[in-house]
Length: 319
Image (cartoon, rainbow, N blue to C red; front, top):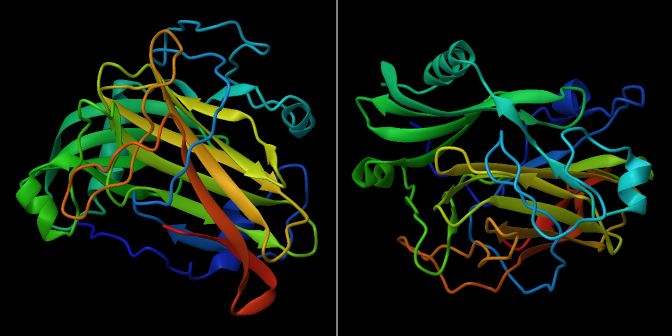
């Protein structure tokens, strides 16, 4: 069983991990370092009046919202295109896994959970877009037996998140189960979000990544997320619900960052007509959701040095 992750934790062997899976395709491998910072759903939030472009419903059906300058695409635009037209929407859901692929992903994940002998209720078998050299990965959700916890799993980094199940068992691992309510149609699963934050002070691009699971109700057609670096927005990264869950990931290649620079991540929830719903909110201590910050959740962070090496750094988010 996994336990709730701390708010901030250095990544061991960060150089090796970065060189192995985070190197940009267009550049040779470089000697770089970085941090993995697991974050809880609690965050400093604000309101940002963002424009509305397009939404989809279901990973295999498209329902357009208001007219968009750029249609949805299942492929990653070039960096130049993203910089020139940040209203691009990149849909990270690439289609369903086969039954065999879903089973294989669940079995791989199950082997990492002590005390669980088999899984039931296989769901959310979706192939998703990822970043760096590896272009796609598998996501799957299942319930473990006998502990009766529901886990979300993404195969690239073998990340496990508790996304439902028996509240009493979840409490033993210091995990709070959250559900949407009348105000909030989407709720971040406790302790599931992770950020991969690699900053080079030599000006070379480095990836800033956020990903996590959300429980959603039937009001939600899509969720989207983007980064602001040097005051400029990235493309929107969009994910649609499958089996009542959204796995949302966004990333940007950041360069020329200095200590003290601010970056932020914006997260929105859309309905079937493409309208903005209430944003995911902070979690209360002990369960439940705090009042919504509006239609956009904003997480702000500041670039700081790696205490072990002044040539490299990360982003310190206030959550």
